[in-house]
Length: 128
Image 1 (spheres, rainbow, N blue to C red):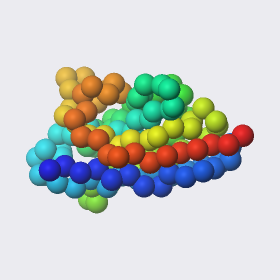
Image 2 (cartoon, helix red, strand yellow):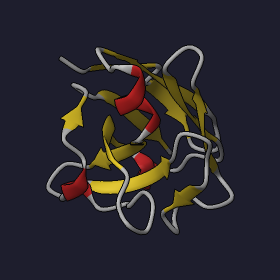
Image 3 (cartoon, one colour):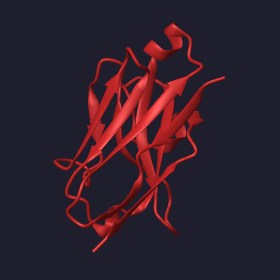
């Protein structure tokens, strides 16, 4: 059973930074190598949206709002996934989720429907 556990959320003032981490367990080696992993978020009253995704040896994809501010990284030796978030603003306030799923024909996607494993989420609150 694949489990994803997020950590690192919290409250920060606008302009600040946070680093989220996700620990993955329960993968067998072959499945992990073929997995996309990513960060998604859901703000109150809004749908869940992709933030950034990464294949086993990166390429990465970022949502437009994340480009230049957020960096996704994957440590395959530790089965962890991080998201460094800089220059945060109030619109970044949301529950952030780690997810994993199979690689598609065009690599990893920012859409949520290709991911079949999800963590419980970690709250990020940015105050202005």
